[in-house]
Length: 575
View: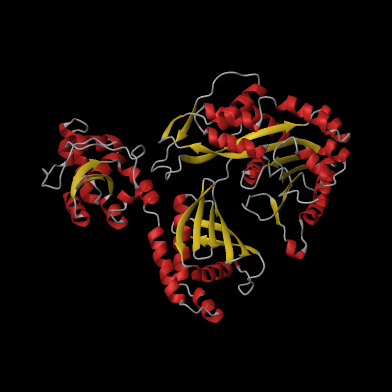
């Protein structure tokens, strides 16, 4: 929390930053003179010039100003900001004067400034807020992220939604709507632009547009959690859906059937690839968009959180000339990211690598990437058959969806190709028998399948508001069960985020992967060939002892990197 020193909006002594720094012997008079000359030439602020010249750090400068003004220095990384207080000051003056409302103290507001010597700015803030002000000092570099977090575009989006509602009117006819959504300056265009800009600011992976009985919900998925951006009149839903269909080149007259498409969107500082899915629902068309940063650096295997021993073995498996490696887990568990990271490990110059994807999420140099298209019956199986005639070394199949694809993939793995793919199973142990259930011959599974990697994404504990957590009875029972399976008795201490400004009140921040890898040994292969589930399960459990998804998640709990509630959620999902 900030100190209680109070600097009211009364006249303050006029200080010259250079004199203060020389007086405190942080820079010399000669250095000050050189900096002032550069200031006259460039027009930059003196503090910025000194920081860029590495004569003083930004934080040291802020501390100096705080001591000289007898005002508190505030670290915004740990200060519990409240959005409703922050937004007492509109975004434009906040960014202009590099200022932030921190606390309300009776009739006084504590306001942080990156440049507390800006007397004009201080006076303007007092006029805007119409309150008595107390001054605090912050490091300028901490402000942009805080501005982006708390000055979300919710109000702007709500206003644009109302403008669109007014533009459409009560009676919406198809011709008028089509004309409206096609105009570049129309409210619907500006509304969607603001929705995408807000989503990128928040680090959202998906945007959901959902017509309900009495309203339209627009929500972002951030770190796996849906957050409501705005609630609008449901009458604007058709306009949004049709504009998005136009952008994706879909049939705007078709509202009875689901449609999928994609488009590229240029925002102010980045380019987005957007995957679009529409689906007719009870109250209108539901639209979900996956946001992919174009040109974003792909994460490598050593960056996705895989344990060192597993990473070493997985790389060795990728070096083999033949065999099938499957990555399993539910939707949204990071399977595609793992496969792309695996492809990045391979030498595309010396190997022919072909992928069959639906859709192609990232463009990789040196690879032959093929887009599956079910509408023209260009299925995974057809792509895979054609790929085998292209002399490949490595084949990636986006998903083993059916028996035909699985059988062709297994044959490819037997006949001297390394095949990577995904399968929707809950864990590694159930994967071979899922292939058998799909109709794959047991001898082919036993011969071709080299390893299965199961994974989940765990939400991390917010480091800014983490505090000790007393397990619930359900959580304690889970801990005891996991410990008992490994013959352990050591107590487990855990933490949980209480919710703060940094994590938007969720108590969680970011996600990390946990992994379970099962390599098939001769005993497992024999059990699969005999379709002996019991023998296979016993052999697999021996191999996985201490290395299951539950074990990995409990290890993260012990390290304070995730909560017990999250570990239990993942484990229940994997059971």
